[in-house]
Amino acid sequence: MQNVNKENNWEDLVKNSLAEHLGTDVEDISETDSFFDDLNMRTTDLSDFFEVLTNKGINMSKINLSEIDTVGGLIEKLSSEEDF
Image 1 (cartoon, rainbow, N blue to C red):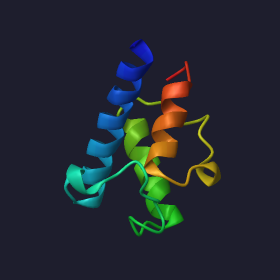
Image 2: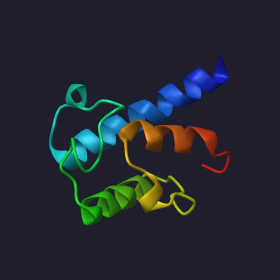
Image 3: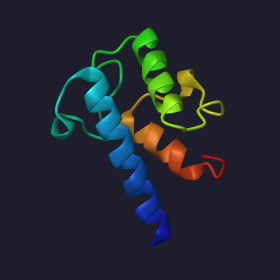
């Protein structure tokens, strides 16, 4: 049960931060959304978003930008890391 809560917390944090970063509603962001295809982000946009998360105190140093394709992929990676 704790893993579900942990993942939900990451989901809320990522989606809310991403919505704010993109200037859109959180309801418009889905876990299946591709950063590049669905959200029309470029690599530099994703890098900037990672910096936003870093500024919120999240250790993004173990996240490989090239391995993350979707919002859900980022949430899953964050929820699986113990050091965050």
